[in-house]
Length: 112
Image (cartoon, rainbow, N blue to C red; front, side, top):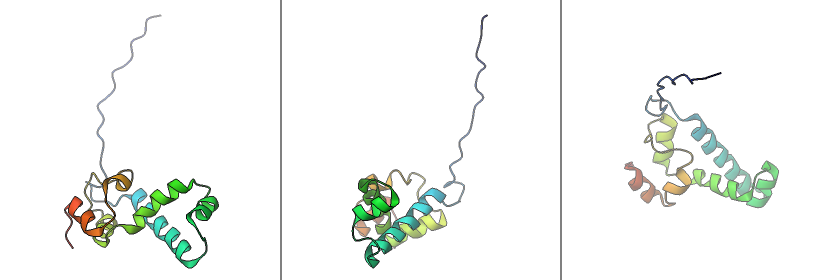
């Protein structure tokens, strides 16, 4: 029996950052990173390895996620308001941004 697949309709992707809304996954990850840093500073967990074990994650995943707790305040504020550059995503932050705040802001063109 011959079969011809139907042509797929054109679809349009909507980037929520361009629509003005905050990136909820990115926000949730920032909040989690700050909570984890608080657990480390307070002594609830004495090491990243202990925290990772409690979260049932690999320590490398926890270390990478903790970088979000060290974003420049201006960048965190722009993420909270949903005004960060559209190309700044959860997957890109650990690889795209340096640790020093001034260099982060320069890389994104954010002014304090």
